[in-house]
Amino acid sequence: MKYETNDVEGVTVVALEGDVDLESSPVARRLLLDQIARNQRLVVDLSRVGYMDSSGVASLVEALQSARKRGCGFVIAATGDAVLRVIRLARLDRVFTLSATVQDGIAALRKG
Image (tube, rainbow, N blue to C red; front, side, top):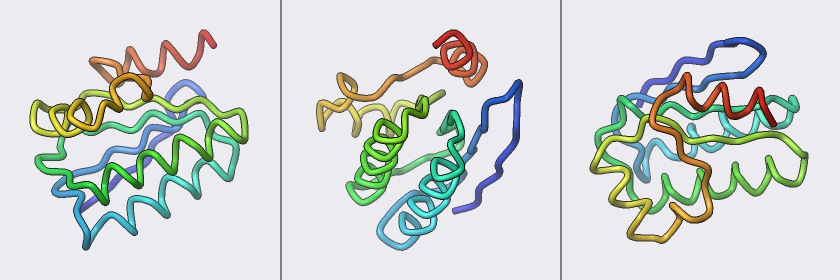
């Protein structure tokens, strides 16, 4: 898994790329939690993630919980069909704030 972080209009965008699985999810988890620890509003761009297993989903859930505790915004953006299927299967589409694009996620965080 590769990743990239950028500041866009005062929102941190973390773009993950590749598979987020048992091997790579600890890196994703630490990356997201580090950004939240800096009180960053966070958009997680999953447009380049082809596969995510339950450990990857658990990393997203932990990041969301941490963001809520700190009062930081947290949006998941641009999920592909395979990843969205996993999120929906776990019924987390009712828990996460999902946006169709990164720009939509940034706009949502800037409003709130």
